[in-house]
Length: 108
Length: 240
Length: 80
Image 1 (cartoon, rainbow over the protein chains, first blue to last red):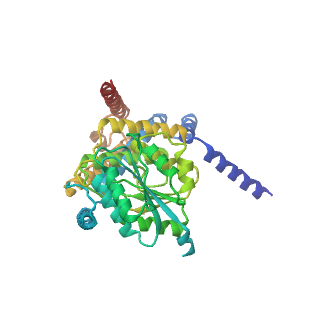
Image 2 (cartoon, rainbow over the protein chains, first blue to last red):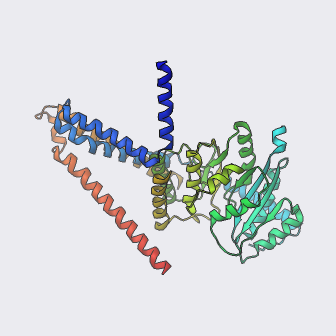
């Protein structure tokens, strides 16, 4: 019975999450992280000066992540110089066919 | 096999001054799609270079039921071109692609095969995976495209790798549903289509495609495009 | 051309990773090290760990605002 209820609850959460606007989802995440941070601040498990630095550390990490992803994207950017050659061949073939069938496409 | 014979694909190609390219494109589509039922719908925005005359000649050659010319009087934008073409589409699947041959018709069979294998509602061509690729972009263009991609992925979590590509296959009902709620223009339009489709829970699959800029560096990204993109991102963030 | 682009990508990844490692050391590990340890002479005082990122963030935001403002003004002028 309880398992069934738990399932239902999870399913409901899914439906709620799906109908949320995306900005709300992100804000929820931010609020959750902030709450966690305030909790840390209150309980002072770690030294206070430390906790104050955490949000900035989080933002710096996010920035680094973005930069890293752009860098990796540039390193692995797939290019296809051979495709350009193949396309030129196809264009030539197509032009000949069009010429045979007397379709005037101009000289360009 | 039976499924295959029932499907009909409507290929919508918006054109503006593409007199040579549209002829090449039509030839290549017919070359690569041999045993498939399809039609090509050319939506021409009143090109002054005689694109429509070329299309009429092609109609004589291939048949008026295979190539449909549905012109509009003047330049009215990409999004409405698809809506316009869609009104005349008789297939149960719709392919949209660019006329300038940056999208090669030889990838059409892989779109169709992917759809058949997975039963997807939408198959999108992606340039950023193995087997795909881009040719003719300089460093700045690559950098902005990667930056834009990372930004969109971090903010929107769309679940597909290429958001701004425009070589896609849709189930017709899905395209009709999605396009009716899209308002953006340009690059953002393509992104809005796929984000909305993904939010509505449609099944989206990807196939690798290559993108060849024939005139090196012709697809420039200026400051206004970047600002438009950022605006579009913010818009999608609050509305989807 | 291709190789140069790749090198730029490598440089970006390298910069981002080094900033991340340096900052992690500075903020997370250093406070647990005794203040008379030799490693402290390689790092600025703790205040700068806040000041520098905030300053960089403000500069970045200003730059973005100026860029957007400039482009919007230019496109408006074009329309008019």
